[in-house]
Image 1: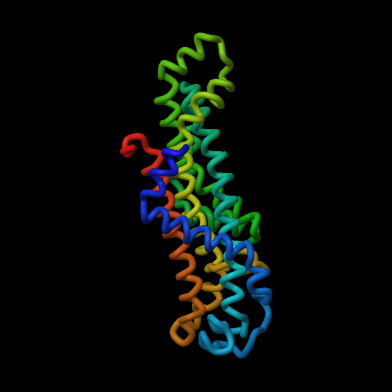
Image 2 (image 1 turned 135 degrees about the vertical axis):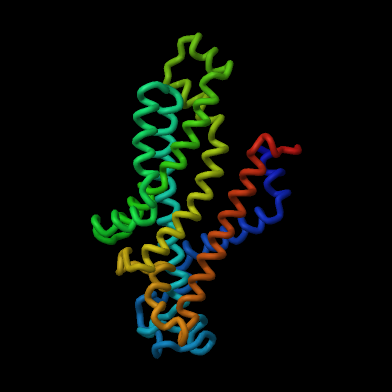
Length: 275
């Protein structure tokens, strides 16, 4: 553990990404205390420029963009994290079963996975939300459904390589149950790949949620970064700040997550270890 921490903190960009991500997370959690103004409340005249009466100005309805960005961070991060956790659990379960047992079960589960991979994931997410009706829960479900196949492929490959290792064969010869072999011996050895891939999936989930909100396919009663951009896109030339500021928030957050993911990969990948 100490070696992992030391390798991670040697990576300057990864540490910078972690600091930014922790800052964004803290803002999301403390938004009601830091800025108690409701993001849907009228804070002034429409299209007031930044640094006038409010920090980031107002939108076409006079709502405070600052409140929207701070409170929207919680929704955006929550959707990205929860959807990724569901996708990782689903993908790891399907991939692990396929890789460990092989044979017909492997073929069946991989054909099932390929069905989802042949459908353009963003169009599929739009279809799912439109059918299920826009809401936070349905957006999370849609993102999780379109995100799990790459994780299933990854875990299947890891399990295929692990099941023929000597320590697994020794466990089989000792009469251990399949569940114990999977949970106590194979899965811990694949966690590094799952963690790295899962961290990058959070960034993708945030981008999908923002795109869905931009198209109006999210809960209209919940503020998010994509919702602000979608609401202000018609006035992009005259009120650039309405779209630009939440867009920068998305850019910085996704960049930070990617930097942390790369740092985790460098710290956990045995081929890249130097200490």
